[in-house]
Length: 484
Ligand SMILES: [Fe+2]
Ligand SMILES: [Fe+2]
Image (tube, rainbow, N blue to C red):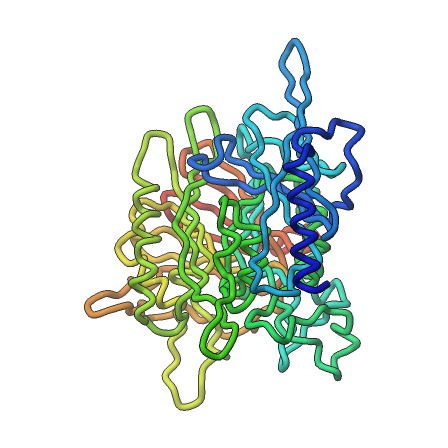
């Protein structure tokens, strides 16, 4: 579709909405918009009173479906239709997102059921969180030099993992970033493994596209999307020069963020936008009537893993805000949710010949967060493609769940570091007191214990088989394989 035709389609779709489509559809008579995916994102209540936003992805040339809501009281049930508004892909993404429309609407307070184009989605944030699913790093890796077998569900098991997670009936789902890994055309010699993968648009300074997101995310995650609200942060794979446009179009819950990664016209033509952290926000999950888990969502898509750079100063306000949001309050415990870990370590097999090996990552994030973690009971991250739990004395436990389906990191080389992470002059994190590492595909289910601040976690593989258990208690994390 040419850009002119596409704009005409968009204008027609907007015109349909403004010209009488708003609120017109009713249950049972809504037109079939061919919904590709529908889901609900947890959003800050400062922007959406219910804390929940409905999203739908439909084919271009359609119009946004209505959000169908019912509310029940003891005496009666009511039904209403709400217009969804389009989130527009930036014009400078050209053909990349021309095949879809992304529709969004806040879910009203008091909803008891919600659906879009016949797809049932979560209608409200959970009244009590008893089962919290957690995962990250899920896409099928395709680079010019490294290819995962996207055609084999044991080599790229995201669809199986999503089906397994759905059977756990989660109350909420934390996704820790790195959705998108189809960053190159499938190399000719690897046709048997990734031959059907949609390639990036060659003329654009980004790697993602609507078809790439359908293949890497919307299709394999379909089983889990209706089950619970998604609490989402972006990974470095959603940086602006990679898959940031699709991320902000479809998965950032905030109003008006879809243009964050719009390619910009520079001296040499279109260039990727700079990757900068968006403001931190909080999601509150009630555990009991007198206990709440607050998640502070920090955007750590940018910066260096291996050295402290000037980016750390740009990142620091996001952690200062997180610390403020997690200020002690009666009945509240707080976790920091951020894609790049603050103190996790990589395999020594990544050591470079002739260079001293320093296992700690991610340096810019660790520097930015230094001294700001006293209000947190846990740091939840992914980014390293394993499962890992690291304890530093006096600091919250660091959990890494980067084993959600993308190509795993090496299984060996994780000796407990004997030196702490240095992040500045006179600034170093303590030497770790304990750690646990496992290398297999999977996700976690977290369950609150009766004691405030205390949780237990089941580590499950992509088939749902438990392979380890973890506990979070008094700001410490400990994990052990179950041997099964
Ligand atoms: Fe990753
Ligand atoms: Fe990452």
